[in-house]
Image (tube, rainbow, N blue to C red):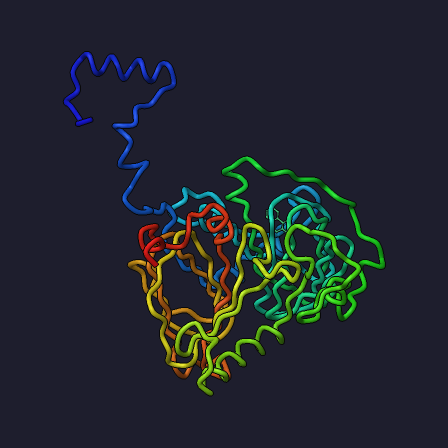
Length: 367
Ligand code: 1HN
């Protein structure tokens, strides 16, 4: 079908289409079927320091309670029309709790996690299991689990929440329920280890008697000491000439569900990457979108046509099919090792489940 000049007859035809809620393909095919993804989300970076200052101000001005539910302030990608969406599939927010504050119990079908950049003193109670949150910990919480948070420390605490809200919003899959208005005293105590960690937190070992198929990981906390150790071991092995790293000087681990070995949540993949001092990565592009947070160190990040210097806590978005690469800045001041540690989460499990792959289909077929 070639595009022809608009005659009165064609104009009449198009009016007929509109009146009957119809839309011809031939005027929309370039938009609907681009030769490669043309993301509406754009590369964008948020400074942690700016987020923290605004969250602190929200802590002074905005109470937490039933109705508003959480003092969470979402990253709104400038390409996505002001919606609280970091990418078309992913929500990312800074959440802030003042000393003594409770975030009330509720549950929702959206899959979620917390990642802690700094501080401690907040516990999250997931399915009545109190779980401590400390720097570097990753806390997944699959959909439809009851959860509440409480800050029992004398200082405020901030962390990052990731959820698949934009995805579930786009496909009309969300359900939500309020829980109890306050949790029991037993749930207010913070044991050193949660029940989930005592049952599921032993490497390579699963409880024989527990065969339940949970949605997402039954392990509710992945502690920084383990993540750090795994990354250090990968780099040490590499220096001894053994495989394991992603590329020279670049170690990476993925949080997995101990019952399956697969991704920790049905819709969200989460990883930590460590780039040794002075190293850079090869450029990559993938179908699907990611949010990164600098956990430690500093570096230079290029995403599409943007290049940013990033420091501890800064967040940035990599839209679908947008080239990205990193460089660790030698001699950074806030990290002992000079390496750049990046926390990353993405929607990769959705794309893999739908066989939308991570790259161009012809390249994948020929690979
Ligand atoms: C939620 O339940 C949490 O539990 C954080 O901490 C962010 C954003 C939208 C809807 C529910 C939380 C959320 C959320």
